[in-house]
Length: 219
Picture: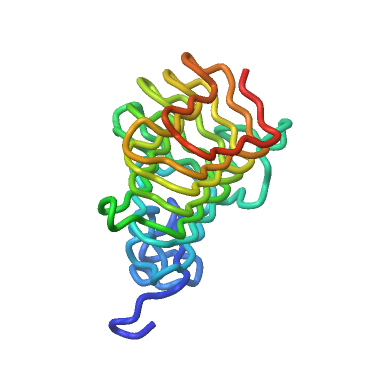
């Protein structure tokens, strides 16, 4: 990695230290937090996150592929266990407003090209997974649970063409997923997902258009 070159692949592992980081370069492509690995990766690069618990809020403001240890593994049907040692867990500790925040700068400067695959996102104080000013972003193969006062997944500013695929969202104080309600929302798609045992609704669409729901359940 050159002195001013951002790597296109970075790694986050909660056990990494400067002395032991899996053969990577500490502070260049190897980090102990997800956010540090995200900040260091090049445009549209990939961040690989090892299994472990990351007590932090992760904010994504530009295109990135964020891959957890369970990337590509559908969590439905008991294939995965929340809280297990095989999960990459973004944990809000009941005090962080959001655990995972996909955030554009504004309506004219939306974030695009974010893919989040293979995580467990849990116990945010407000919303576990939040989207603001996001277009063409993907959340898949992810378990979302235990928000302490609000939704599991929520949009809070204008968004378009978000894809939620093979997602479980349960045990949240609000809705399992709430799309719309703030700004303009079009062309979202939910497929092969389940929303259950939430204190409010499983799925709530609020003033959105052209939203597609395929092979999914709310109960």
